[in-house]
Length: 142
Ligand SMILES: [Zn+2]
Image 1 (cartoon, rainbow, N blue to C red):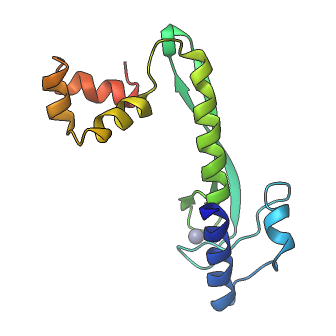
Image 2 (image 1 turned 135 degrees about the vertical axis):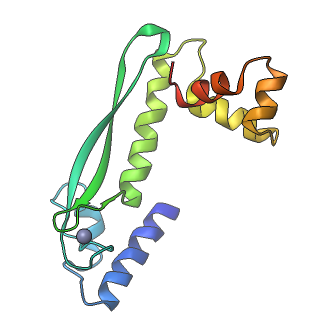
């Protein structure tokens, strides 16, 4: 599991710089249930707190809101996403597919285009849509 390894790396890094505020291995299991007590990587001073943002999508003109979790430093304000949060955010984004029916999600447009090694410009020529339109499909900015 790549995410798990990243967490270990992060913990090891904190440990080396003397910022470790918890010890392995229980910390990983507790991470989602308990307040996050990691020290900020940017300023090496503040503590990271979990924050929640929402991203709204409008498939078939229906609003679908997805909760995304991150951490924010209480000293410098830097926002980061822990690998466990990232995996969870991706899972929650993928779950919205149920609301899309025939419509493709933005990341599906991106995946299709990249599978054929196309730039947005090339893809918009092939599909007969403008560059801006194609970018909007990918960002679900309609
Ligand atoms: Zn900070």
